[in-house]
Length: 396
Image 1 (cartoon, rainbow, N blue to C red):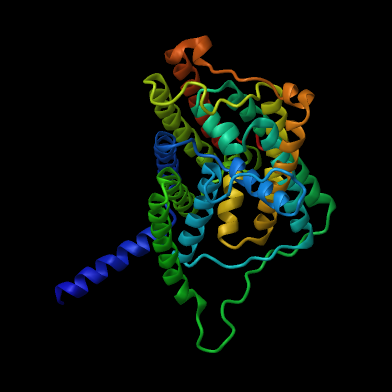
Image 2: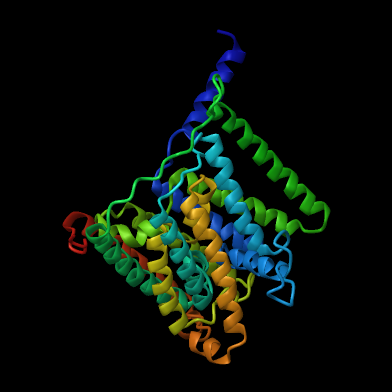
């Protein structure tokens, strides 16, 4: 056997290990936590809702509903991050031969509409989705992030209760079926997917280079960060919905544990950047404590249960070809834009949402870190304990 064939065999085995096998959840939590800190250090915290909101703003401006045209989605940092997430998930699903258009029943599509709309309203109230309003807000040492966590738990529980009711009272829906992959004899779509995925990732490198040439280096870096998130989440099947729903539905705690590991890493990294002055203390501290974060979290938690995906989960699953989640993403973007516009012209709604609470101003950095690490260590242990006892599993 010559050296070339040996090297080719190693490359093939490495490719299969990376793209044909799901990565462990604990690795996903670890990598997402590290990527979150890198993204914040580079330009801004990771988020999804504001990017989708920008897409909604752009659409309404194009059709004449808004008089002021927003910044282009191609240069707005939040939009570029969300675009990168979709780009990375699509490319990863192609390389792993998992991209296929999956249609859903009319009821599931309706749930995508309602769920996406509720997520958009909740994200507007909380100052972000499960990523921006919860994950990155907690990482930024904001009290509203913890308030949204409580709301997400309540919303996920209510959503699970509804799903239980639906299973008992509505006729079963046919499962979504993948579209046919190549109808012509001899044509095999799966064989082309990896090559298209490679082209997509080469295109991402080219796009980052163009950004740098046009003096948008930060945007180019954020695009690559978003792509990194998309690859990690798609390969690990990382899902915030499961982190909040599974303890009530099946008792499984692996996703909740992965989320806790991830957020503890992110909290420590954000705290270091803020404490050293590398980033401003009030950066990404949403003005949503407490009403906006709590009620927005409930709305978002219920909506993500209906849709079957959170902010990040809906985007990466849309990148895999799930039509229901594509619908959810569209209505998320539109409803977030509309409700945010309503809040901007309503002093009452803005005041009701709440104000900024930066925990170190009250507890110091040391005790804020102690508090947040303790909160997620307790959630980690509670998820593990519930996995053994099924105490919080909803009986159907």
